[in-house]
Image (cartoon, rainbow, N blue to C red; front, side, top):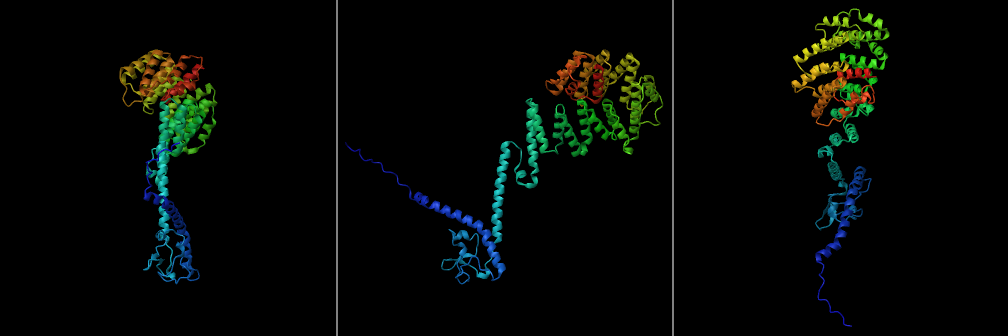
Amino acid sequence: MQKPPPSTDTPEETPHWLRVLALTWPRAFVGWAGDLARLLWGFLDLNIRKTFFRWGRGRVRCPCQHPSDSGRAFETACDAMVSWSSARRFRRLCPLLRKNPAGEWRCSVNTADVRPFWGRAGAVFGGAALAIYLSGTLAAFLFFRIVGYPVTYPSVAWPPAWHEINHARAQFFMGKAVRALQGNNPVAAMMALSESYHLDPSNYAVGRMLAQFSQPGWGDTSNSVYLQLMHDHPERRKETASAWFLALLARGDFSTIETLAAERAATDPAWVNALLFASRRTGDRDVLRKLLKSGDALPLYARQVLTIELQLRAADPGGAQRLLSRPLPPAPAPYLVYYWIDRQIHAGLADEALIELNGVGKRMEPRDQIELLLETYAAEGWQSIVQGKVDQLLNASTNTALIELVCAYLIRHPDPYILERLFAAVYGRALPANSDLLGAYTSLFCAAGADGDWVRLQASAAELKSITRSQFTALDLAEAYFRDGTQNRIPFDRCLRSLPGLPIDVTYALYDYADGRK
């Protein structure tokens, strides 16, 4: 058998520099790594021993110079560098090592002058710590940005600014909540809002949004958030209390309303009115008695109103009429006059109420006078006079306050003529641009529903959908409640929760309407 011809190809020889690098690089790397470890350890070990040597003053042997040498400069070898791969690298630890005229590495000072170099140690360890810290904060910054947190590098790297990280995370979860709401995912939105507020409790807007969003289905959560907002933002306590009251009113949480209104009763007559409304619903008189015992903290008019209220509740119908037939206390406050006339109307003393109204003058706000006047006319059965009065009001002007007042009246006393005139006035002239359009058209929706006018109810529903730029499907539930007649298959509280932006007086009227359907 013939052998194959020898190959003419000659293998390429490995370059010399590559073979040298392959042989020397591992040894060089090991030597460099070993010297680095010795350097870091030596900054502590050798400097500590040198320090003790300096303190010992001849009682302690020099830790680095060779003991058999003379101990004189440039004649004495260095024991501490024996295990080092490079004397030049050792000089970073101790610059006293230098070459003598013969080219040998020797200590450049006498034994008595050997000293530690703590400054170098501090610079090296400090620089290393700074490098590690900067690398760690850079990695954290990149991680946060990849996740989506809108942090800045200074807020990550500078410890006094670390609180800004939670603010950025709160913004991130707030964005998730908005996207969840846009995607019609209320559970995810609720979780994101809760996390955002937990990360940044100082953000009042997020807290208000969480409290309002959670109030329909998570009442306890809503209450706790509102309570925290009242505590954390005392400068906005009035605004928070008003929003909380509306949420409680929509849920029918009258016990909590009593507590909140009792705390705020000294600040505004509206809170006294809210307290009385809630107390009548719960039937609890103790909260009124406790508030009366609070002393001078409560204004005089509030103490007078609470005293009369307790007397009326303890009296029979005849006794209540006798009590309300007496003259008012001297120089009564406007709210006391309002309360007195309102109770006269409810006690069947419409004639006396009308007499009081005729003598009120400027002691009461015009809006309150009109409200009581319409109620008095209705109690007297003077429907045509009511219609004429409303016509007069609507011809003069049409604003959201008047719309809400007339709607509250219509919910308690449905009247197709007044409803028609009201809608004609609203659609006949544009409402002011800065008006509360949501509250006005929601009031119109409820007035039409209470009257059973489904055409006008649909018209106001269309306006609400235009204002909110949404399908506003919750209106379907409210419409079903009004169409349901006396069947009560849809709970009243669900109807209220489906009608955001309801004014307080209209909500009060809806509770009276719901009572009439039972």
